[in-house]
Length: 139
Image: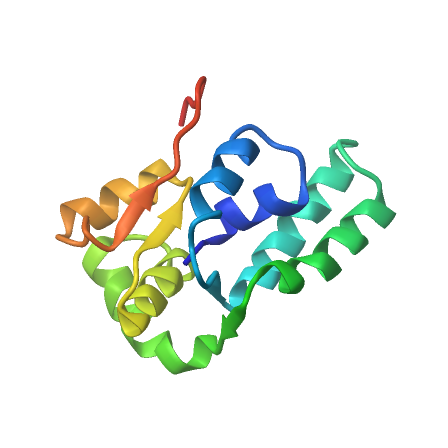
């Protein structure tokens, strides 16, 4: 399972893109909550505003994302658990939505968000969250 920090690497050139593809290439099924489309769409919008990509590229990239994932699960199914995790980890709800989905599906979550990974580890969810790393990673 992947979060938006990893998913955006599949549709936009970013540091860690090669490592993200390599890490998930052995996964039989690639899953994410449906919320990933909103977060990746926002990240692509920010890249357009920064001049990193053009609007057409952002629109095509967002359309391509669901074809790279075998399953998008309903966020509403785990929202209560996600909110509880948000309070438990003292972390943003939308990040905890990915963890709640991973727990619900009994799988591990791959993230490139070190702050979230650290929060999950501190709260005892280290086995459910894996940090994607790459040479030169700073955050």
